[in-house]
Length: 179
Ligand SMILES: [Zn+2]
Ligand SMILES: [Zn+2]
Image (tube, rainbow, N blue to C red):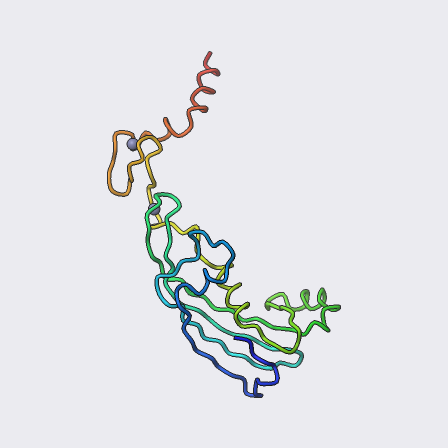
């Protein structure tokens, strides 16, 4: 997935490909239980030559395999996004600050001017946007802090009174104020 700048024709090139679900985890050191996909990752990329560098437009679409941070249930969620990056050769790095200021609306990155590393670009887009903290549902009720019951499915005897159990220190403080 490395493309030579000299191989990019004037009219640009378009690529369309699928990456296997494990593609991202295989490229991350110690991914733990994170960055899991339930389906292939569909990717499209367009590369154009610009006045000074290369414009990389693209997108990805898949289904993320997630664990709800509140109730710890496994679930899947559509995961897709788009990007539009300007790659500038390193020789312009001296003017980096000015470029950043005048092109605030654009993503400007630097490269060696010879090879476009698509793998790196896709990997960092997926990393930055992966929905780690997404809940299984917007109103996930979580687990009971006392008995561990999943409040999305059952109401244990502690349900509705969680404020009394969540932070015993707060109760002690209230007690000492009364005294
Ligand atoms: Zn949940
Ligand atoms: Zn409970």
